[in-house]
Length: 246
Image (tube, rainbow, N blue to C red; front, side):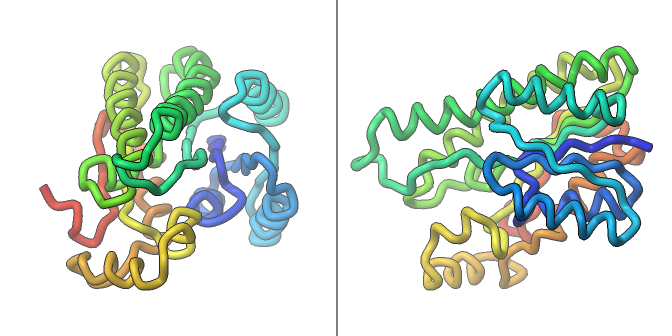
């Protein structure tokens, strides 16, 4: 049975991904930074439905935490077959005019640091086995700018290119690396930073007339985690109700 590690999985999109993968038979690692009660509740819910899950605390921007987390997974289940890097590092909503370098540079640093550390930790085992799935949560903002979202959009654009290089280098090892890029998602932490009026305007701008649902993002991740996606790598896949058309 394959093992899936989901970072930032105690709530929102991450919890939906963990639940969906558990339903499909994966052993699920619910990573959290400081949400132990929520993570344990999710593990209990998965177990009650017949799945297997474990909660592991760890800050994905800290190398020691990431190493410890992956070591715990190896001790318990032997491998990480699927990494879903979903954890969202903090950012400010601001204009360029009001933004400091610390706001922009700080967000780019934490975004790439977390992706780098988690990828570095799981890839050696994947190379040894000759297979693996790396899936990263980007955002439509990396290609579709929106006022006030310069820090997040720029950081996610950097993540997008990082993942393409990882995909290129690891393809000969049977490892895929892909990006899932939702528009604003109902109930997500990022949605909570936007006013209700602004959320209505965002929904109205989407051809399907609504925000994305966590389960729709989770289903796209589940496809990329599966054997069915074995020849898909280096791709950026919008979950946007048509707003991300190119």
